[in-house]
Image 1 (tube, rainbow, N blue to C red):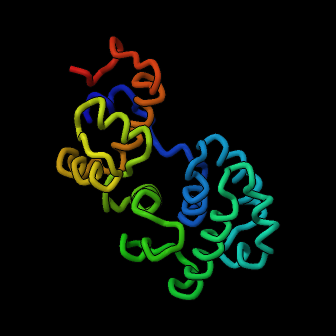
Image 2 (cartoon, rainbow, N blue to C red):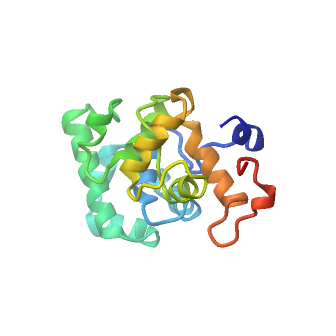
Image 3 (tube, rainbow, N blue to C red):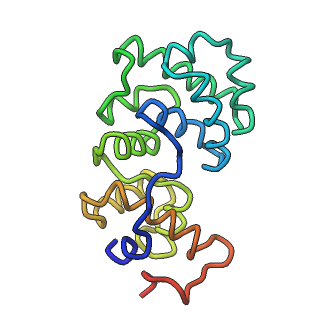
Length: 193
């Protein structure tokens, strides 16, 4: 972790947001999409919809149009509207601060919950495992497991808890710049040894 921190001192979430609710929505949209695409969509989305009730007032077909380019827009619309409804009914319109409560929200699994808890609230509940983290965990021999949940369990044992939030960002930066999917630049790798 130390070497990666030195290599990527500015590592942070690539999803643009100004509060926990926006980060939750952006993370739901990021499934099977790129951060760049999500940021393009949320630039307009977050001006149009500010609170959970805004997402409930809009007809589903209109929200689907707004998020269409992120892919899986029907499911994501159901998740966003279902999450907004539960936030209002059960959590006073606020994003909850625990893993168990986060996992009650439609469309929210451990990855999304970890992103929001760690980056919005500084709560170290686990380690985000996305495609970059999964690929690098295999390449760097941190885990040979196949599922995100099992890889996360291995990483929790390896990575100091104080680094659980920053670690995935470091891995993502490293995956994009050096440990690329098709042509890794192993000669330039700070952690290969």
